[in-house]
Amino acid sequence: MLKQRTVKQEVRTTGVGLHSGTKVVLTFRPAAIGTGIVFRRVDLDPIVEFPSTPSIVGDTRMASVLIKDDARVSTVEHVMSACAGLGIDNLYIDVSAEEIPIMDGSASSFVYLLQQAGVEEQGAAKKFVRVLKDVEVRQGSGNNEKWARLSPHDGFKLDFFIEFNHPAVDGTMQRAKVDFGDVSYVHDVARARTFGFMQDVESLRGMGLARGGSLENAIVMDEYRILNSDGLRYEDEFVRHKILDAIGDLYLVGHPLVASYHAHKSGHALNNMLLLELLKDPSAYEIVSFDSIDQAPPSYQRQMTSEWSLT
Figure 1 (cartoon, rainbow, N blue to C red):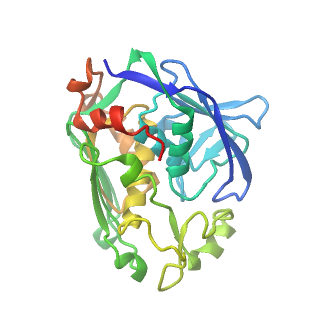
Figure 2 (figure 1 turned 45 degrees about the vertical axis):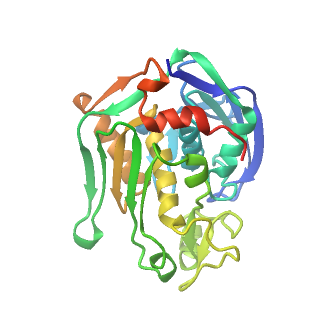
């Protein structure tokens, strides 16, 4: 059977929060069968635990934020994306401040950290959420319309369109399709960085956001061009990062999805709405396991065998 996974050993890193600018220590620790991905604010007394579930996403301004009582853990999407990409089911993520460190603005640092910790298969079947019928959410109308959809598919693939009306973005591909039956998360998605615009920085900082942003951890643009001297990592890095975010947001459902995701100008809020819409209709999905790797969708056959070499 396809088994649940955790990490072999504890690993740790230090960084700063993109929005808070606060230094934070992040630690990955092994977790028992059925634990799921659990964030822990170890700087609080008593420690507050945040299970990965869409029902506690309480803020989606520029990030996905988990809220429990008066405590928060923010910007969880990149580390969740790395866990999804490497097929980690059970993990404790300890943080010493409110925000997950941004590292280089992508998921690659978290991928490398997980690879350093190593994978440990556990003695229980891995569970998947298989989508059985279309589920869709929409916002706005006309040119401002945004939408996201989950559809039945024997695997996991994503199709994303963005539109920012900025010359640096418009000059790249604004639509990307990723099918994990054909491509690797580590090599084809994980390195895509978050991005922002200089003209938005002052207003964002006035809202307490983007205080830790820099050319070291984001693609930054002025009115006309990219300011990073090294340019883009992928020719479609902007939309590819939105796919990276969506993978992390969707993994908050608690298990890997067996589905197709299609989005038009979606973001953290709409992704969360999509999960809540899915979960409120028991006829729209089922929880499944696979007795052997041959029975699993091609996306997960690839993941179970090829994503763990150190890059």
